[in-house]
Structure formats: structure tokens, C-alpha cells
Length: 343
Image (tube, rainbow, N blue to C red; front, side):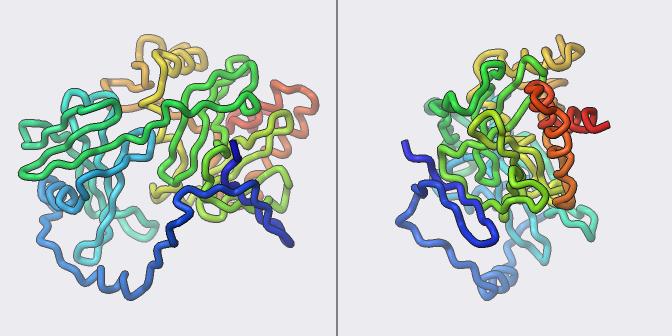
């Protein structure tokens, strides 16, 4: 199988590894300022103080069939109304979608210069006139008033990392499809009790990476800001950094912590990994890592939130100190481990 697009920009060349781009026959979508301004002028009859009114508007705009790519099953949207950009999601949570529950959120898009002016969340179900039915594995019909929409949850059940990407002391938890469009393998290293996100470069990687000025083994995404470290022992890239500005505004590039492979977790493999790492969680979490019936969830964030490229040098310093100690080397790719090894 051909490796798909992963591009690395250097000062004098562009390296593209055997590109085979999905939808190659389609031209890029041109976005113009004219379109943006004219879109701002539209005035839809929406009561932004009513969750039901916003849900009705969003649902009416959907086509007859949609595909949900992110692996925690969020279908994201955004629109402008009265000078405010609104964002949100319709979520078919693996925890309760088969009970007919639909999670809906809408909020004024986060920014750094203002407070959130709108924030709505509601669980919709049959009593609200919202009917969710499972019609096939990973396929649901969502009906409201006189309209139905098919939600296809993107099927990654056959996605497995090649042997070259996984170490013998690591356990594959599942495939991650982040809302940024980046795909990853979530693994748990049982020996050092650490999680890692490994770049899935067998699929199309919609990103061009620039080598770090501080270490040629560190690459930084020009679109997403995701930073990866080239593994010295395996042919793979490990996620080490997410740009802090993206995390602060909760956009598509805020990191994969909220896109765990819910649809593809085998049994209690994730739960057992959490408990192995933190024994105090025993008896407190479900198979997804949820606590309090889904009110909160154990996060997997081994990477750092960096502001400057220099912030990533903590990983270079740590791996240099690790020397030939492989366990110490891989411990570096957990933010807590890298800080401890550098102290």
C-alpha cells in the first residue's frame, strides 16, 4: 500500500512521501471576502436565547445525509448571526445514543478579546420531538418535525497500525480521527505506563510540516500547529505539542484529547489502561473513562501546549539525557515525564 500525503518543508526543498490524495479529482474550494461579507448580511429568524430555536435552524440546514468524522462523534457546525459567530456540535455519544439521546451544544465562538456571550447545551430525546434510531452499525436516522437526516459515523474499524508503528511493550487502544483532519493511533505503553498519540501517515495527512529550528527530529504543522517528534527507534512520529492559542479558543486544532476512539474500543482495554496508569480510578470509571455517568472524563494529554517553538526543546533535552535508556526515552514523550527527567 502506498503511504499517503505527508509533506515536510525545509529551507530549500519540499519533501512529499508518495502522495496519493483522496478526492484528487476535486478542486479546492475558493473562499472570498465577498462571500464572507455577504454571508454576514444574512439575518435568519433565530432566537439565540432558545436552544430549541438554534437546534431547529441548524437541523434545517443539514443535507439528507452527513458524515461524522471525529471519533468522539461530534458533528461540528458554525454560522454568523447579528454580528456574532456561533459554533457548536450535534453529538451522538457512544454512551447513550442507542437510548435515543442527542447532545446539542451552541456557543459564541471563543476569542481572546471578549467573554462568551452565548452558551447553550441540551440533551434532546423523543419527548422533545427529536427521534434518533439506529439503522445499522455506525449509522443513525435523526428525525425532527418533518425532516430526517442520516448520520454516518466514519468507520475506522479496519484501521490498524502496521508493525513498524507499534512497540512490543505498547498496546493499541484505537484509531483517532481528530476534528483537525489529522488521524492518529492511540497507544498505551504498559512498561512505563504512558499514553502516546502516533501519527497515522498511511492515510492522507492534510498538513505540511516544517522542521524545527532547534531539532531536525521535531516537525511542526503549518496549518494545525501540531508538533511531532521523529522516533529514533521506530519509523513513526509521536505527538508532542499543540499550540496553546488554539487550545485557549477551543477550535479545531485544540488537540486530540476530545477525540478518543469511542466506537472502536475493544471491551475494557481503555478502562484497564487508565487503571493501570492510575490505580485510584478503579471502580470510578466506565469503559470509556467517564465518571459520574458521563459528566466528566479522564483526559489523555501527554503532549504540551506550547506558545513558542523553543518550548518544544524540553523534549530534545529529555531524549538527550535518556541516552541509550529506551524506557527513559519514551517517558520523555509524556509532558510530566519530560519535566521530571529534566529537573
